Each structure stands twice: as C-alpha cells, then as structure tokens.
Length: 247
Image (cartoon, rainbow, N blue to C red; front, side):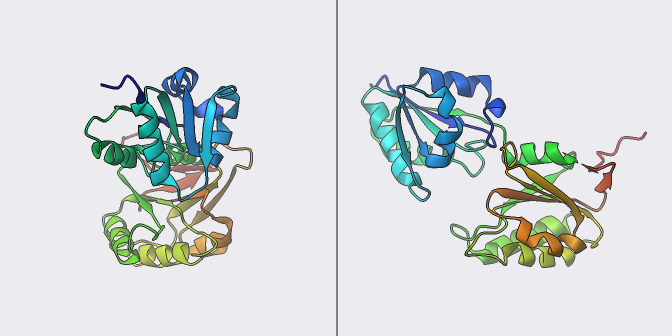
C-alpha cells in the first residue's frame, strides 16, 4: 500500500491571511505542489523550494490524475484549489479520479474560506438566513437547468449567491439571471457585488435588484453577486439579512 497522499488544499479567496492553519501545514509538509497557476502563485511565499507543477485553466482532470499518480509513488502532494475545494473546487474530481485506481492513495480534503463567505463578510451579513449558491457558468451545466434553479431559489425567497456571473464570452448571463429573479422578487431588494475578495484588486458595490443592470459590466469571473431575500436591506453601508431575532 502506498505511503503517499493527496491533500486537496483550499487556498481561500486569494490572500495568504485567509489560509487555515491546516492548509498551511499541508503546504509546508508536502513534497510536491500541483495546481492552477493563479492559485499556485497566491501561495508562492509558502512553497519556496518545493517542486511545483502549475498549469492553465481547463486542465483540472490532468492535475488530479498527476496528483494521484505522484502520490502512488509515495509523495505527499498538495493539490491546491481556490476557496473551499468542496465548493466548485477540486475535491470531488480528485475523489472520482482516485476511485478509478485499484489501490488509491489516501485523499485528504482540507477546507478553505469560501469565496461566498469572504464576499459576504465584506458586504456585511447577507447570509444570515437560508441561501442558495448558483454558478451561472454553462460550460458544465446546461443553461436550462441553471434557469430552473434560479426560478426555484428566487421563488422560495432564498438569498442567492451567484458565482461566475459574467465572462468575456458569456456577457449576458447576469442580465438573464436578474430578469428571472425579478419575476419573483421586488426590484428594491438589496444586492451586493464583490470582485476579487481577499486580493489586492478587491472592489465592492452596493445596489438593488432593479439597479443591478447599471453594474453588469462591473462583474466578471472573479466576482460574486449576492442577491438578498425579501427582508435583506442596506444599513450604514452594510448588507443585512435578519435572522428573525426580536430586538
């Protein structure tokens, strides 16, 4: 049985300060770091002197297979994943790839601060009640299914966190999502946008569902959009979704 293992490390939203102690320990103890180039660069100061294999977006399966193969040879591999690896990250794919092996190495999932959590903290406290997280990227999920999820979440009055709201090739996804939510919610509910949470280029905007159309071009693939529920409001620059306590 192999003595190697793959630690799927959540690197958080972008700042080393957001890494957990467990994540830092895994990066310190590993023999090899594998990951998407952006995420590897974000932890560069913690992996000096380590063997590193960095690759471009779209090579996720290759990275997982390489990590498993290296671990089978006895190496301790840190497979870095942005945010939390179990939320739109590398955890599931790594477990799927490892399951193909007759004798898979140990797979360790190390959680990280989610982009949703980091964005919510910058905006205030918008996720204090039930919320839904939906990616608008239709690369792996048909848009028809995304539409159904938006209708369901908005109709049930969830706070909605939108990942991947707008890309260079898909510029109309956020506008379409806004129109769907407006079928169920008032235009004056609170909306927050955060770009690059935890990074040097961090920015945020406060708006409403109606006026979100004015901020469509502010959003990109490094942004999150938080659409409040019917009780969410802005106060003193903070987005608040009340839990229901009597004050």
